[in-house]
Length: 258
Image (cartoon, rainbow, N blue to C red; front, side):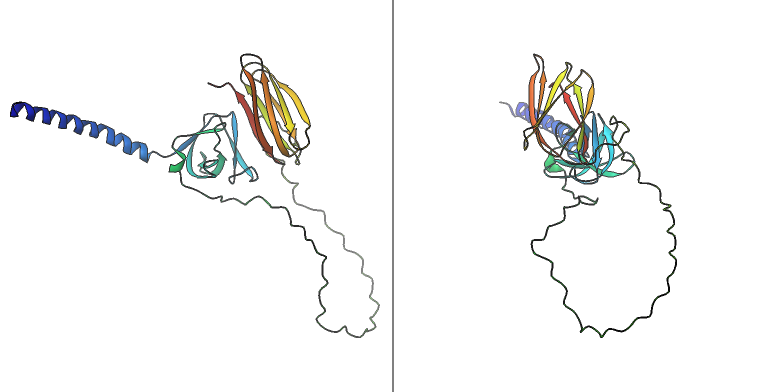
């Protein structure tokens, strides 16, 4: 091979490599520097003050809302996000609820800034012990008979009554049972669905139907449940398990697999 031809080939290959790096490297750097976001894929999603259903509900977002992600907990089981008004909160990171734009290991771990769920009081096993006296009891002294004083009437309270529970969109306006978990079951599949809630502890079941494109509000006692969703062919049957917590208000959407 002539030296001139070899030199031209070397220059050509070097130019191709340089152009490839000039295009690919900025794209890779931009991908790494993109801020993580979470897109809501369920019909509605609660925003809470901490990473768990035991934290207070501070808002709600709807399908296709894109939320900036500033942290995560429980291996992206919960995502810390910023709402449109600048409020920071937590949403579920489950695939049924959100779609994360970056790998989980690129999102920094975060902790809750809101108050943690109240823990139940511990029950003591022993009997209460009386306090030891600090001094010997004094000798009894005859007391003067007090002059009766007429009671002072207690003024009526002026504080307003507590505010009603703020319910997510679609849950209506009537108060819901505070000792139960309530779910808005939504049918985005197409045909009518037959839903069965089975309590894993008691074995009791609840059957109900959700029409095509409709939604049904159901409240259940706290506990572990198995859900079965039946649809006519070719859709088949779906089964999954979850834990219901007292006071929980959430959506349970069913959609067709793409």
